[in-house]
Length: 245
Image 1: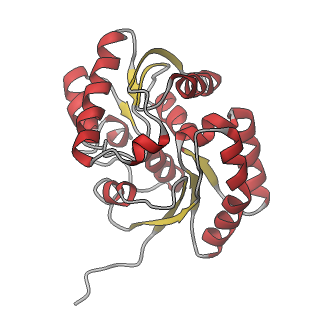
Image 2: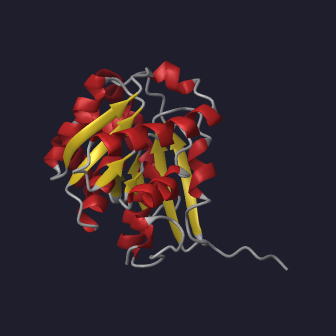
């Protein structure tokens, strides 16, 4: 007998990179049974507005195709993508998507909404990115009512992040997250963004150590989707955000 059931929710990610492996690997270790991940990919060449603008026509094509294929929600993933566009532009895209029949979200919008949901308005930020990009992320979050009170970053380029090994990335996620929280004791939570590394393991580890919620691209966008669906939450054993009602 086939134990598979028809998915009750289809969550679509349009990712910045043509090759994606960490996202589905971590998603299916986190999502509840019956939630299907749909993927479409862009080929954004760098963390710049010009590189993002170049791929936006393809994004809209993917968003329409995914919706026709049954996606309940489309997420434009990649925190650097939203940071490059800026919050005003992202919110305009979300509004435009509705007119096209697409339910659109982004990682950064989901992270900000998730933080507010659990009563967090001051966060530490830990990334693999250079400071100009971290500045853009901080400005975006602050525009959404989330103050960045401390940072730690490894200052890597997109090309360098593409070559980061799994074990090194997992170690870096813990080390940067811990350093960010230690350096910013007033932070009520940690934003640990980035879809190109393995970081889901850092959520329970750092939450046990500091007692503060950890927000990833994945847990925030999944939380936002399930909350909109009115089903699937809370998720036991998946960290403070997904365990919240």
